[in-house]
Length: 245
Image (tube, rainbow, N blue to C red; front, side):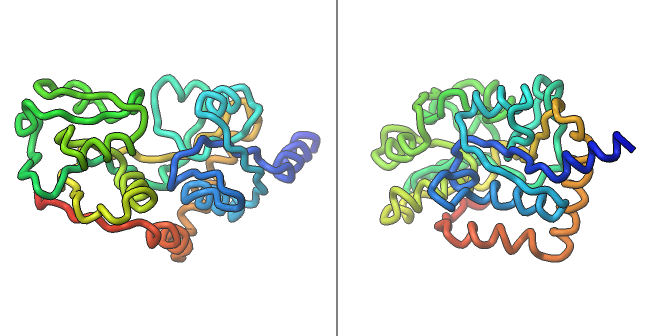
């Protein structure tokens, strides 16, 4: 009886959910918290959990959730090292990382040989996937933010940059709405990364939270409420043409 009672107490206490700013997935503008935050909190609500959202730096999010100060990370890519501290939910989104070029350049991307000798703007510390990291023969020029690379691309200082499609579209919507027609995605993805919520193993009910989350996610996909939430955010993003594969 005691253990069942304890489970009920945990279920009644709001889950402390944390994430770091990553527009349009996680934002910190008053009531506006971003697409991933909206999805994860709604899925948890459907699973029977109240939530309290904190927007922190990424190191504080990781360390705090690992230590049990927070219960759930809103969005995380799965890595071997992290699995010791977190139990991952089923993926609730897939990040597609693609190259962006100026429309007036005839660059094609079928394999990395096609990009030999090109200057590619990258963001410091960003995980683009093993294939890109190992690719040789191009100059990878680091910047601190994607927006800097989009500006360098517009000015012809670099040949390509790359990023998650939603993030690229958000940055252009926000900062370069009049120059959108100048940019184009290269059709072939650099990488696709499943996006998960990560539950702290320090939470005594971590296994149950993950199971409840996965069940609620399935239900929301089946009844259309999942797509409805995504559509709210999708509609705000500019569309970018893509070169055919």
